[in-house]
Image 1 (cartoon, one colour):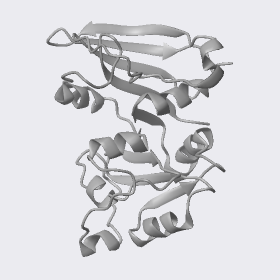
Image 2 (cartoon, rainbow, N blue to C red; image 1 turned 45 degrees about the vertical axis):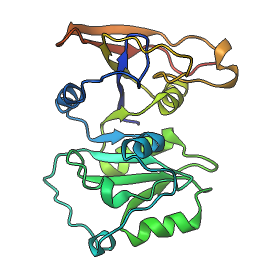
Image 3 (cartoon, helix red, strand yellow; image 1 turned 90 degrees about the horizontal axis):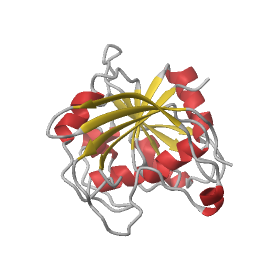
Amino acid sequence: MIPLVILYNAVSLDGRITGFDADVELYYELASKWNVDAVLMGSNTVLTGFGVKAGQTVPESEDAFQPRVKDPDDKRPLLVVPDSRGQIRVWSEILKMPYINDVLVLCSRSTPREYLDFLDERYIDYLVVGYQQVDLENALEELNTKFGVKRVRVDSGGVLNGILLRQGLADEIHLLIHPELVGGTTPNSIFQTHGTDEDGEPIKLYLDGMEKIKDDIIYLRYRVLNGMLK
């Protein structure tokens, strides 16, 4: 059984996730009330958030190579990041994020051995799930059975959101609609599909809640009604 999965994004009125003045404080204020056990974040989102390129490293102290003391009473969520290609090398900085208690990397059988050694040397936990790429359904099941994860918040872009929606793994979508229009032609939206998905069945949603929060920002909550796209 997989956990409840909530996709969460701040967007402009035209559905873009960048290029506008997002209220980050409001975003995390709302998220802190959901009592999730894990936050799932795409590797590209992590790289962008920390302003680094794939494979880029940062200076590390000796503490980065020591086992971390884990507090069993720490209720902050686990940060889970799919990174089968071994792009992220700044885990010592990621672990400093104040709203997580630890990290877990999702890898596949195609992940380079060198990257797994890199994680082992820094006592970064990882799961190998999938062959050429991470099997997200299997990963979510493992999060439930091995880590007791019952609720997951997804803080990511359209690629990871798209995979979760196409595979029927997302249960809810929460959006903060900002009163701005970004425009442009870059498909930087919350739901990106590829190939034959353009001819697939639209994903049906049920509006579960709507409210005006502040500064004309609208908070929408949807339930996902149908599963995998054809």
